[in-house]
Image (cartoon, rainbow, N blue to C red; front, side, top):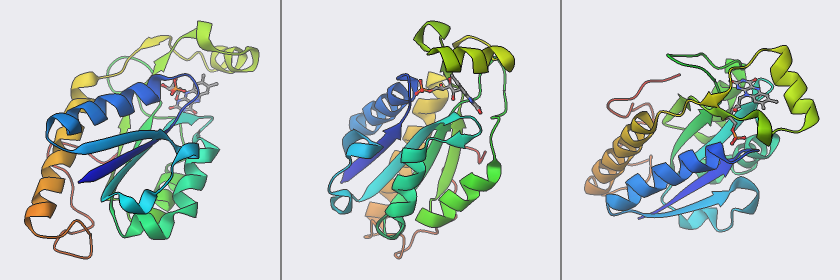
Length: 188
Ligand SMILES: Cc1cc2nc3c(=O)[nH]c(=O)nc-3n(C[C@H](O)[C@H](O)[C@H](O)COP(=O)(O)O)c2cc1C
């Protein structure tokens, strides 16, 4: 089973989350390709897709939104999961975003679930405008990514896909309920 992880970010931390998900899926026997959303080819040859974007200024990055909207029909025939990386800080920071746009994206591709992961901010990586923006909102600096939560989410996807394959269909039109929640994960 080929799984695509299509990812968008500006400073590499979302890509590392995608790579960690890929590693977990690979270790459970899946074939995984991680690609920048702007470089995805042959989407239709994959049985499942995970699409992730960093959140910037309250929204997924434009190239990630466009990828989902443009490929909505193809994605809707696959098992799809979405993730965001963005909120910063210790504990359980909430994303400063517009939840409405995520609901639209989930509808556009029939995603089974969306999950938000805490991100990373290193001022040294930022350009002038970005530094100013994070200074104004007093965004906390640091690497807050929760690798255990990321790996756990990936394991849930691996289990859901194995169940799907066992049921004889990799497509949502088969026996899998599109609203299935992967065990051990939460909507956000
Ligand atoms: C200029 C700027 C704006 C950001 N805006 C948001 C935001 O609106 N909501 C949010 O939850 N996180 C926001 N973040 C945090 C990023 O999403 C976080 O740093 C993420 O891990 C970056 O991923 P990347 O390294 O893949 O680009 C912002 C970060 C920067 C630098």
